[in-house]
Picture 1 (spheres, rainbow, N blue to C red):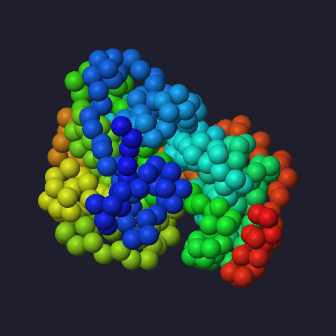
Picture 2: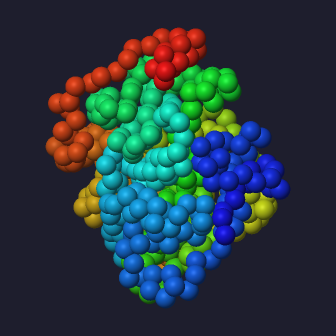
Length: 436
Ligand SMILES: *Cc1c(COP(=O)(O)O)cnc(C)c1O
């Protein structure tokens, strides 16, 4: 059987895998969900604790995409997107951290971006011309997407980033790959970059002619591989122990992937959503009112989201019932000051280094344990500390944070970027020429 996808806003209408993955966003502003999500089969559960992360990925991918992608292709895509480890570290008794930052750009977004890139490459293999992926970035996403698509046949990526507003090493991640990756340094803000990307898609004729697609985080193909590591964490806990997952959240894609893992049959004790001051979801869980609003800047900036895009998927999964979501998902939020204190405290108490996003998660895990002292909490550590070097040096001192070689070596590479004003016409004209 093939998989079909529907929009959360019109559950009776279906599209195929190619449309869901290349369109990313349905025209009705909902988000795509797979029609069939069933418990994984007995052949998986019989021996799942002995499977590797990549093996788990193969089972999960086949359960979601079914026959819409040939099994051998899907297996290749899954293995290449989970070709780095996700170790579970026990920091204190029953207090675990799942390290998701061992990929090429040191962020959990590598899992999703690598899967999406390879799946898009396969889906467009017989199309005329190249697929052009547009992505606006405030830092992390662009790096993961660029690295993921680098060298994928039939694809090219155009990254728009705001001049002077991403960190030095982040900029190098965007501007030093070359080949099928092109960086535009926009004289404006991240919002300008996003506006330019949107404007290209809104010109339907141009967008179809130029074969444009987007790589944003609501793409269903980024969600699926993010469910692999929930199984990976659970299999490394003592047999019979059900994990409580604590997820530092911004757009809530990671948490939604956890809910997907549960739908595929993984036994989970509870989900805990951890946010910084951008606390729209914890507030909703507390009060039952959803009030999206402009984001505020924090030190855990990958979670500075005021209108989380995956919230509509979460609501859909829980049948739009506040009580149902509240029964499965707890929410906590923390400010920068206590987050900084936690980085210092956990380092001195345990020797373990948390970065700002993981520290927000750690605090939420501690809060949860107050009323659930027997819980095995698994905090998802979403990035490597060296990506937030300023904060780490302020809290732990200089020289304490090791920069992994694959990031450090970028410092000597030459930046290549095209300068551009933040004007739609300029961007569209450039894009027409670039793709012709
Ligand atoms: C993107 C990101 C998050 C937030 O993940 P969501 O899936 O958007 O909730 C958290 N931490 C880091 C380091 C990230 O890059």
